[in-house]
Image (cartoon, rainbow, N blue to C red; front, side, top):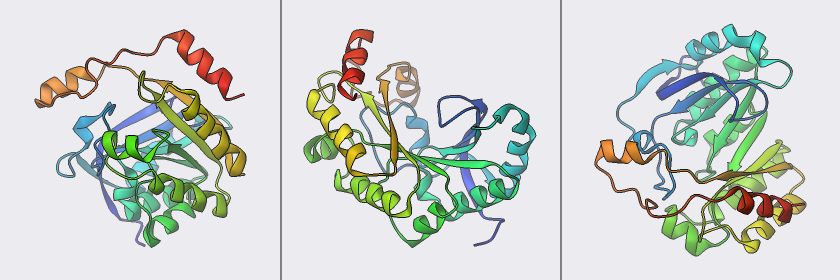
Length: 237
């Protein structure tokens, strides 16, 4: 693996607070093999386009913000789907760790191969999306089997990588006791999981779909109320 691996980048957020612990330098990669019904970033789907950068270049940019990261912050790779570019991701994380920065991978866990295993060896934390409670819902609203992220989670457990499970709550699809029971069960059966984060479905992305000329599959789905989110979080306790 060369430190000059070039990645396709959609955008960078220098002081992110929603993509891992603390304040983080977040790199959003270009390209995703999935077509999630609730996706907020349809402009990251295609592998063409975006900017190009090396892992070293991005790590050098990130280190400028070290004073804001504090004890818990660092760098995060999100997307799109970072697993589509595992060698670049490994390069970026290796360069970041060489500069004393912690690394966090935000992923759907939909791909697994030797390059990704190598990437995980320089990954300090994973944010793993568990999108729906059944294979049927996964295949219909994501485009892959639920077995993919579950296999990925098993590997994270084997490698003892601290993991946060995340789920976007979509009324009528996964705002159910069964979905919460699955998340709680995965936490109880995988020692690597130290937290579960529920994120409310939002439709601010509608303008992106309109600009791209793409139908937003959940345009008529309501956003979850604060009461729904509170009740589901209580279910996880």
